[in-house]
Amino acid sequence: WVDVPLTVPGRVEAVAAGQLLRQKGFSAKNVDVAFTSNLQRAHETCELALASMAGPHQDTWESQRIRRLIGLNERHYGAVQGLFKNDPSVEKKYGAEVLQSWRRSMNAKPPPMDEQHEHYQPPPAPLTESLEDCQRRALDCFYKEIAPALFDEEGLPTPPDQRTVVVVAHSNTIRSLMAYFDGVEEDLVPNLHVPNSVPILYRFERSTRKPVSTKLQSAAGGSHARWLVSPENHLHVRKALQPGGMLTRALFEALDRDGKREQLTAAEMESGLKEFIREEQLTGGSRSDCVVTAVAEKISRELAPDEHISLQEFEQRATEAYAGLQEADEYQYADQEPFP
View 1 (cartoon, rainbow, N blue to C red):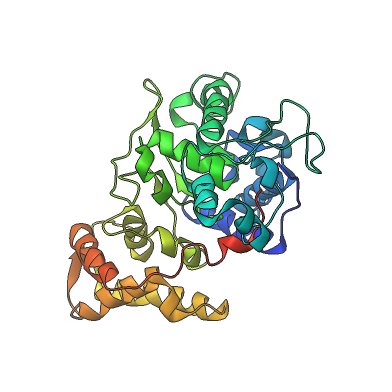
View 2: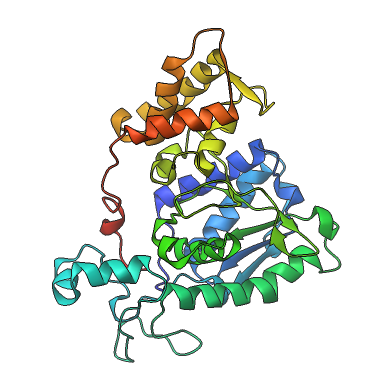
């Protein structure tokens, strides 16, 4: 709830996300409504992504299509709001295990802030929230504001059964919605990660208002989501790649040069990998630190020049390749950020 501006890297990532969506067929002119939070960093991300989705056709979208909702604001961290996650004094006061439970579990919450706190805001701002509290707020927002626009609202350019809605929010509000849509069990919620600026696609059935895409295995037990992977964003998703999981499917589709989505040739994998590796080198990424690229490289090396690989076999080989890779510390970078 601390209303800090969007960072320069955040602006770059927002533009890249919009470009990727446009490349995948999601242009700005087909977005009926875009929802974002009341916080300026989310609103700017939304505007930049939509402008990028419009490409050279900037007259196909307008800011009036963006609706700002307080229910999509980031989770409130109470008394530790605005403090850095790796601040030694915070860990000394509360303990590492307690801090971990606040960040990753559904029910734990920091102590509430009081009116003397520098970031205190009067109601409707909460004094503190658990992830469950955040999820309840985000779901209320979904059913009262987002779902009606997606399924029922009249006067929008597209009929409800063909409608596209964009939601640009924050890690915890998106994680809360994903946990609900995918029926994630409470003990698996800590495994549900939301990398920055990686577009996530859900398809809904209008009559049930439930996701319809087949669930793919993930560390959180399975997800209807489809992640859009590109050479620009794959460094962000290396922690979310799981054996046979949704990012394995996304990686397969990203490497599929002809778009048939049935099988890959060795040449397609080699061509796609060159793009990933080139972008990694340009951005200063470490080859050994990128799980996504390492998995694909290992599979590619095992293919004969004239061999084809199906999605099922790709997932099986990805499972085996992933098992041999050592992951970096999950919070290596996240701990350098303040509580939102």
